Amino acid sequence: MLLREVEYAKPSSVAEALEILASNDGARALAGGQTMINVMKARAASPDALVDLAALESLKGIELAADGTLSIGAMTTYTELAASAEAKARPILGEVCAQIADVQVRNRGTIGGNLCSNDPTNHLPPLMVSTGAQLTIVSQSGERVVSADEFFLGVYLTAVGPGELLTKITLPAGKRDAFAAVTLGVDGTCIASAAASVDGSVRIALGCVDATPVLLRPASADEDAVRDAVRGAGLDPPEDVHASSEYRLHLSEVLAVRAAREASERS
Ligand SMILES: Cc1cc2nc3c(=O)[nH]c(=O)nc-3n(C[C@H](O)[C@H](O)[C@H](O)COP(=O)(O)OP(=O)(O)OC[C@H]3O[C@@H](n4cnc5c(N)ncnc54)[C@H](O)[C@@H]3O)c2cc1C
Image (cartoon, rainbow, N blue to C red; front, side, top):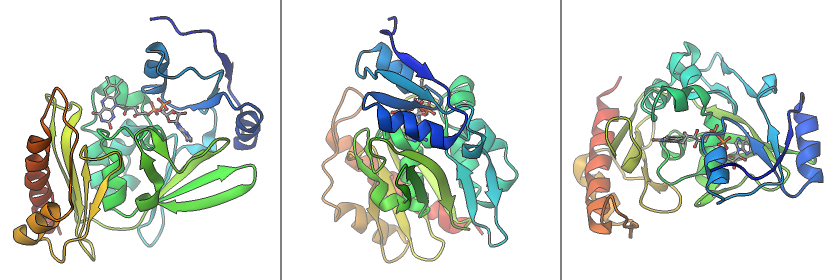
């Protein structure tokens, strides 16, 4: 389907992008366009103007600090993350990005777009929660930092409000992470997913079972503790053409155990 007529701007600075977003309620950021353009074609969204972030160099790139902290620009693509030497400081990030969809989506799709769209089947929201990422949001009134635990508010809804942009994702150092998913075919959309991090305390984030990733904090990564945590979370997963609610619940338990075990086996 053809897009309806839409204004287009390609600002050359974050300040200019924020000015356009603040002055037009109907303006929306455009990152890789892999979700945005599709929902516009389906008429599920109909912005008046697109603010293309592609020329904003300050939103690109990956920096590794001496203490292992990773700072990732929101416009960094999955392909760049998977290929980055710096990103290997937290290996799970590149490993998961390399599993997303196909090469076209990986070349265009950005970490910022993936998080801001917060599709419950997306790979990266649970991973950001399990790894304890911090997200930097800017507006004309300044900058604020939100933890991944508080960033995801609902389906397609995040802490990024009107007139704001997600600029940076910061991940603490750590290597003992894993991601397990049952997908629709190889590298397909997740039916259920679990991201686990056992660096320090155990954090497991389940995807596809609620509007936002569900964080579990079992006392240990042992199978019984993880199963108890999933069973005690009061989950009521949605059902759809791919899985019943009961099947998703079952998968969540299996995947949480698998992810916790794989994360524990990493050194
Ligand atoms: C065929 C296909 C299969 C896919 N399969 C998967 C999959 O298996 N797993 C998966 O995780 N994803 C999958 N995706 C989604 C893909 O990863 C998208 O790229 C991603 O969800 C959105 O990223 P984007 O950079 O394309 O953002 P866009 O589509 O450009 O934007 C998405 C939303 O985020 C907003 N936005 C983007 N960047 C910012 C920012 N910096 N600040 C504020 N708001 C912003 C936009 O306004 C828009 O509302 C698939 C997509 C396609 C087309």
